[in-house]
Image (cartoon, rainbow, N blue to C red):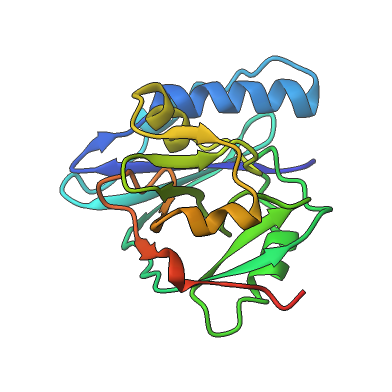
Length: 202
């Protein structure tokens, strides 16, 4: 059976965005397995022991039931450059445990730290995060992500980022790029100058 996963931020004993993770679990099970979810994320996490004074990455692997729960100390990746990689066939609308195609694209990054995946001319995501772009006034996130992440959803609901159509040729309009995911909010995400976004070789 196809496996999915959630990555959940736990910092100083606080579990972040559990309701958004729960909602995505429910949607994913309904879409993929055509049945209602019986996974209760709060109950699952309440049975676990984890450090209360650290930044923890919790990974919950599941299909129609939870298969594995792991905890690891988290340190953000350092991002100094991104390479544009174009692929029009990629599909990752659910958070599949099988990330083979994303990993294949990531391997094309050459000397860059990560990638910007472009599909049919539109900017989507990096290999592990949703993207945001600073225009000097606001942070914009592409309206064409591969995966609608929980942090992205939360920041949109708080009006801290704006959803915009961003084509590959639009990147020059922005000053900076940032990477957000369940572990990284807009205050601690890595950012780079837009000149550190390197064109692909396609």
